Image (cartoon, rainbow, N blue to C red):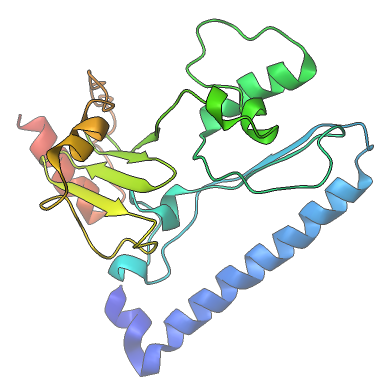
Length: 220
């Protein structure tokens, strides 16, 4: 709980942060060993589980639609791409498979929703056709992230909207003040249909938010 972490001058919170940083430092070192050991003509793709709030947004938790727990690394090493660079356009894990198909010269199935990120790697941003990447947290809670803005819509209809070029930590919610045209550009990208909750999903909610959320959904 928050009180437990903040007790004794944030003693447990400091240990939590220390352990998290130690874990990421150790894993980073192991990734380097794997990449060094891989044959130079091998395509290497690194992705991971999502991150963790360590106090940001007043949370020490893993589940949210904010970047601290939403983002994952996606690192691609290809023998023909030369020196590494950072891509600013948001991409998703659904893009891993079509990207590997593209890089390996294998036709990707037509049914895939993901896109190959090869054009972004090669610096041709004009070929990138997705304005924002969608992430969802349970039913009817969605995040849309572009290269400059972050839009969130919750199941109760409330919204958050951040200009990341001016507010990189997402402290200033512009949902009530931004031009309607900006918000509508993101709203039209929201899913048109919502998949129903799995029948077993409400049996053991893993936190208080989910407990209350399931009650609302099941009473609709």
